[in-house]
Length: 340
Ligand code: 13P
Image (cartoon, rainbow, N blue to C red; front, side, top):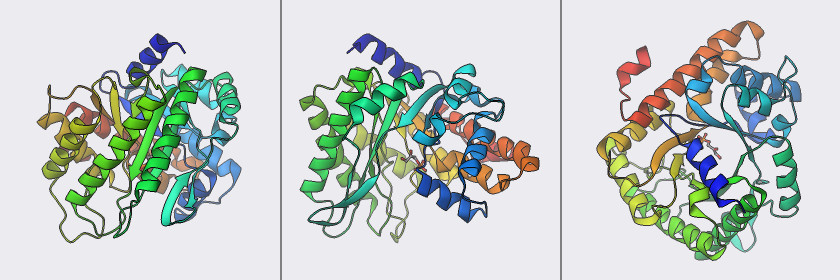
């Protein structure tokens, strides 16, 4: 394991004011989003949509990295350039989602365990040859009356750690993503407590599996109340609860934390990230950045509609959300920026 090289890649992924774009929806999820936008759910639609994203001029000014999925890393842009190479050309580091999805967990009703360790070492070797320099694995944790169970938390945390160790062996920086879902009626306090329990378990197992903290990134949820909770907190309360939770659970050796958006709107995700970066400026040991999927992509997908003529307008919308996310990283996002 080349710890120095892993650490340099991890730092490069959170350098400056830029962040990451997750464009790694599985085929079923990508099809669901295409269907909702009235676009045919074909391999060519998925390729053309991702072509629109990757060829957006100016994206390299907002992103250090982009996360691809197995299908896309094997495809090419319309001009015949493999997606990973097209990203490298504009100084965006290509990454790859390597989990095989969260499936129902035996003996744990309503809980899931992420699959994909079988054959992972061989797949990672192939992704390195295809140009990937970092990887991502997502675990999901649900909050309800009887969840999360200790069994579910421990098993997902152990699997995340085993994945991370294999990535570092292959020279890939692992992004470790334990997502506490926003679904449900739970309070902000319950999300804070569950996120802390989850992160304690994750960092315990990362240590046990000898994962180099300097050579990884954490991709957590923000601490937010459930979507159906009666009391929806202010952006400042969410920012404070999130950073306090992370300060108590994430070692300072981790170079960066890159948030998922998790079903927040682009505006909400940016306002909250910005509040964290402005309120805790100079008081956090790690960079606090973004790795949004929906919060950057959604308006562009709605506009694109599968039509070539709409590509420029869709790219403009994509770039706008990416620029708002960069402003949030600086702690300078305001609703007025939305109108620019
Ligand atoms: P969202 O930002 O849409 O939550 O997606 C991030 C992600 O990569 C989920 O795995």
